[in-house]
Image (cartoon, rainbow, N blue to C red; front, side):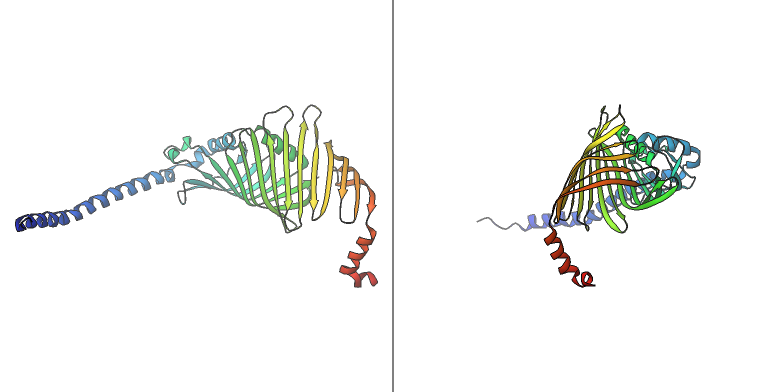
Amino acid sequence: MQEFDINKLRTVLKQVLSKKQEIPNYKRYISYTLGFIVLSLIIYLSIPFFFNYSNIKNDLEKKIYNNFGITVILSENINYNFIPSPRLIIKDSKLLSFSGSSKNIGEIKKIIFRIPFKDLVNAKKIDFNLAEFVNAEINFEEKEFLSFHNYLLKNINKNKVYFRDSKINLINNRVKIFSTQVEKLSISSKHKFSNVVLHGKIFNSAFKVNYRTKIGELNPSSTLNLNFPKLGFNLNSNIIHDKKADLYSGSARSTLLSNQFYFNYKLKDNVFKITNSSIKSRYFNGNILGNLFFSPFLVFDFDLNVKVLKFNKLITELSNKHGNFLKK
């Protein structure tokens, strides 16, 4: 058994005590280092505050078109903020037609452009990677839908665009037909496809739209899904665009609760024509054929052919649900 060495114990204790006295010096050094890093970061993030954005407004409009394919007229109310991330906030701007013309089709209360961290030093080198349009009101006429579709076909490798808390008005001969409340609309392109996802409300009924189209083909194909959850309505359709004949055609399947509707269609010269269909419902089976005219007014001329009518079921359910009304 080894003898206890009191001198070694004293030596060890002295070393421990001397290290404890050095620890505050390390803490002070770390605090200074962190403080310097934070101060440098704040200074770097604050550089865009000193840019004169009025002088580069035209350059910003060109960058927006090059990065997002959207033409806007910016106001001079341009501000920079780095919370929660570096961004430009522009108020009271105008949205021009998707056809590339100078026609004003919308007003935008606020535009938010996210700025990559590397582009904060030079105002002219700012390259936006995300655009968010807030409280916009867009007026869509029939021709503008075609312009928007062509915009999607050309929107190759563009950055993502968001519309939030906005409104889309459907216009016919300068008359507003109805409005759609847009909670969120995203437009993006990836792997030769353009994608549009819309969450909104029509007549206080929530709906969702997914539209996907292939870019760069001679006769591009698209898919459309429209869903009204509370109504139990769902529509799925494939769309083929024959550019040479300027003809849209395809097939669709829609369901409303337990009712199903299948149809083939063609769209040309403002006329939507159902060429073949099949209806299966709780009360009858049959088909519907005819035309829907979009211009100058929304008019339809359809023939409903009923093959099977479940009359007893219809009367029984109407009596159970609305018996008192039928008796009167």
